[in-house]
Image (tube, rainbow, N blue to C red; front, side, top):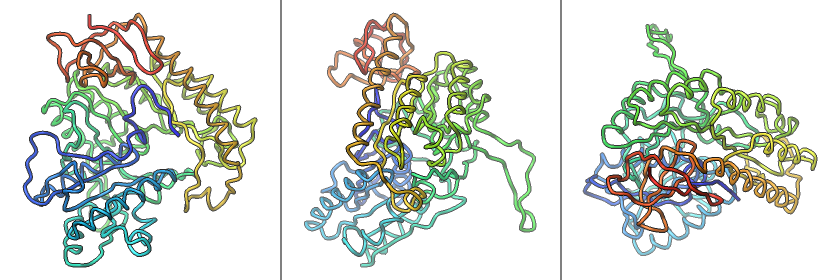
Length: 479
């Protein structure tokens, strides 16, 4: 279960989207269909895959029945995501029965862990490719065309795809994801990411700035810098001499430096980022956000639990007091900053009292938005090896419902604080309910709906007076 308001563009909010080329992209040849599940990083990866295959003449399609190659980009974070993927693969297998030449493949985080099941036991796919092996896709497809099954799930300590210009998929031409790093060095006991995405490595900041500048020149007005833990971004130029690495004469770039570099591209380029880790987010980052108006006053800061003992079992490497101290710093340095979070209920051995500490943490922070889930044991994780998943599902569900109810109140309260204020809104398109209304987000990530007005169009900013709000949306008018 999840609950995130006012929109669902972050992490695991978008499930099973078919991805198609933005208008104007022309690639003749075999047709490619990509469907992505899970976090924003997966959607970014699908754009890299589309770019690699576009170079080989593939053209994307929104209908898998018409595709020559069908890929599903997978997520292993929660069990229900794997269930959805497996059911979807069965649908693809049915289509393949009508079109025997179709190639069906699994990409991403489920690839390494479930490769034998997919290839041998269930015979659902022809090719399995891990997150660091996308450059090998043309060769792997050739192998399948030759009658073989194909696998490459090798992880890399160097691959960042920095030289690849992603093909923008499902693009509105306004918002874009930009990957700044890959992998994760944190070993949270509930998480499979270090095992599926490998060790942490940062991308050359000059390539990141170049990609963001190119997006701005093409009309994009918002970029979201992506990483499993953006606050640990760190890049230094190195050169090899006699087999050893030596620093060249260029300074180390940390995340605060990178944020500033991107913000300086143009004041009209809005900058977001995800995700921050409470142990790593620094005052330097907070002061950089406060310094530049085009860096959004919005931080996703996953807490997972409000109890220190549970956090230790989760191997989060901070305690309740540290997290509250980071929230205090955000409120002090960026007083008007929106904060969202992730919460897991029913983690191993969690008591009712410890659950209540999570509820009290929610009262302390008053989150703007949250992703909330019952604990789902993932095979291969430290928690699965060390701890019994001993909280009954009905108790997990009760605790989750309490968390969701409290978050609904908090989200509505936070939105009410905007009523009577003027927000600068980036117009993203028409409202889902009416082509007489525009919608867009303010820099707190709140969705704002307002009547279409002559002289304004998507991709432009508008000053909107917020007149009222629903439980998930601000409503106002351009002034």
